[in-house]
Length: 51
Image (cartoon, rainbow, N blue to C red; front, top):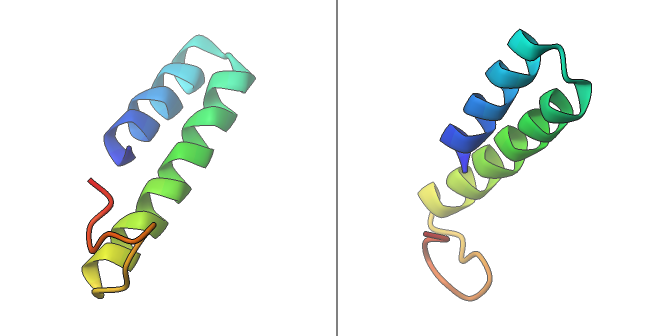
């Protein structure tokens, strides 16, 4: 999800599409939060890792 967020963010910035840039930021933040929760051992949706 982090990689998809980075790709969307870069494409939105390069193509000047604000919706794609916003979507990329949201995906990047959500992916980072889920990664951090999984890394510290906190269960995410009943699973130790979200992937």
